[in-house]
Image (cartoon, rainbow, N blue to C red):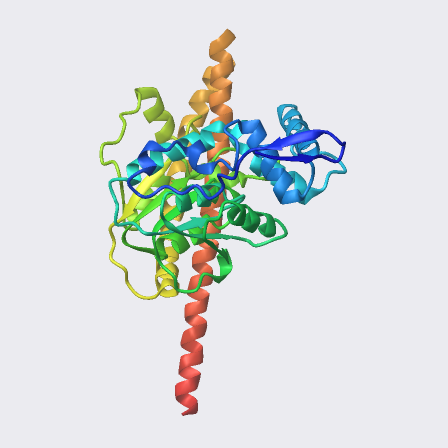
Length: 384
């Protein structure tokens, strides 16, 4: 262990350098997600503090204060303290994510185990990589990883996280990926943040090789703070079916059998409390360049969204009067539950109508571009 003085004059001991830890493809099954992610210490709090020490060039005492204050604010529902540096706050939130939201790390263990059955997967794209957590997991598991996001002021810290761990991860702007295709795309907690969901899904689809794997967690739930796009909750009941229609199949063919109640709520588009991570395989052969295929899949998805959102909204609309009557004529818990269902049905209708309007608008834009192209082509021919 290295020993140094912090800026209060106290001795602090630094764990040995284990930042270059890397697992090969056969050994990663025995490594937990935390073992893949950790920086220096086996203790979650200590590890977060030591990483902040090296990222922000501060003392361990100050780093631990940041960790404790961030966790305290988070417990009190405060993610952006008044007067705090936004970049530092975001960074600390990412670093402390394994403490605040352990399920987001634990679920990656299941994913990595599932991917053991596909050893031919070599290149991975972390689509909307955020703080770089999943990129670290994949890189230390032996994949050739590309991290992509809307590059901003946080990216130097993300790049430093990779450098400190001595892993080679390419960093690209999501708008500047060119014609690159990948064997595996990881898209966790991304699609709920984007307004044009169909465009993102089409871009992901076009960037997968035939037989490539897609790992996606669509956190379609409202936080009512603008972070998640509210209308995206409407996709809950037909998200997987949309993906299957554009050439994907579920990695695990056996789907869990839902209860009768959940089946009914899903068919009506009522949002369920738990949304699973979706692991799919691209079955449709590659057809054209990334840009050509993206445009074709995008139009296909708009048509699917317009049709299914209309169907889902109508189902909820037809059941709404029954739920409203039950809510007003029942008593006690039954009345509360009925009113909750009524509220959810209203949300389903408004969300799906928003999806329908956006999809039809985008389809009209496609038709307008096609008409304009025909006019230009005719004018060119006439000029010749």
